[in-house]
Length: 276
Image 1 (tube, rainbow, N blue to C red):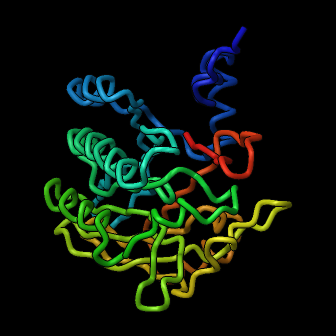
Image 2: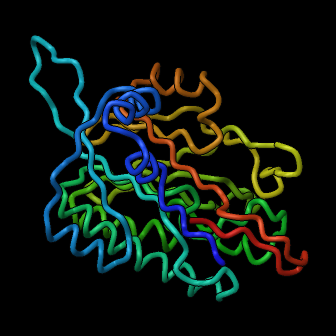
């Protein structure tokens, strides 16, 4: 008999803990207490139709005496691949674009100002396989690749800043690959990019098979909704990363990441790591 699917930490905690214990556990896990937002019914309906979960929370900052409050609505996307990892690369990317487009439409209904997608969101999580093909075929230009052009249209349409982490192919420097996040203004202009600057080498898991540490430092991007930075995945384990982004003036630091849902013991020629 198959085990029931485990949906999320939140649902598990809410199901099994009494309210007082739940509040204390969330305080330990998340810090400040958050309040749940009442999201538009149309957004919730569209999310259900699109087969993705929609949640909204708010937390407050300290009040200032001389400046008024500023509300920024941030959207964070945990993605999944809609097609099998064996499907043609172009079809996988196209399907992910369509899925993200539907998610961004719902985010716009909720008034999101800045949306951040998952690390390397246009591909399966393949970095645990060490195999080059077909995974490196998902790499594309950060400046004018199809995914960046797609995100520019979304940003302009919805007046929304987009953080789009991709596998970057640096055509100007010998097709070197980078784990990169592209930052796009709500006007649709590409503000710049940042690269993952710490690479996990844990046991037999070594992402340097695909790319090495980034070389762009700790950039911060000025947007209409605040100064933002992107600390990609494994960089979160390095306190000086957070410190440097803060020193450089970031109001919000994003940490897009992706992890394999499972490591299937398949033959080398067909091995893959899907993600959820």
